Length: 245
Image (cartoon, rainbow, N blue to C red):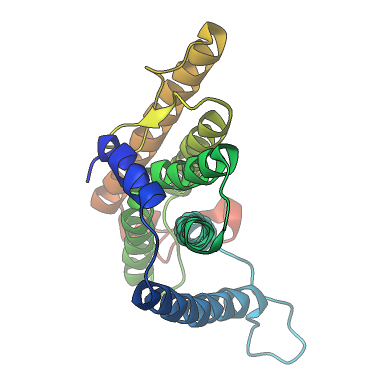
């Protein structure tokens, strides 16, 4: 659905009480999520503590590609688990609370709405992670698994990743302090409902900066796949030398 449909979803959530079967399904979902997120944390921990085969070697350094993938994954999983927990809390409050005040209903629905807005922003995370991994795999194939993407391609990965993080923070912070903030289909914040003009101008400026950095960085990452050669498949400044000199 579109971001404009969220209001209807929240109204239905506020008016409906979860049945016994729905609560049972929610508990099962919670168990599955707990197992899945535990496995994800295990994978992340293994990446952080991975060591060289030599005995006593320090943990292997995190490559720029892997760092970007970890940040994108953290953003994606954090928002989705937050949305699930917020929806579960809302369902429990409306089902078990004997007296639900208007203020509590409004605060709970606003929390759910905030994570729904953020969900549109992080939809780009999986494809960005795949693109970064594809670029690195291409560089490794051209350098007998000794090189890396070009320095400027790695910088573009950082720019695109942190631009998406900035966009997510704008949605979360703007949505927290102003109910008028929404998102468009691309996940960018929309300020049509804001009444505070300086805040609206600042948010629009940051939104434009994040948009240019995000899609400019992604374009450079995509170009790097097309122009990389064995003699350029490395970034000596970061310890990766090309196979051919």
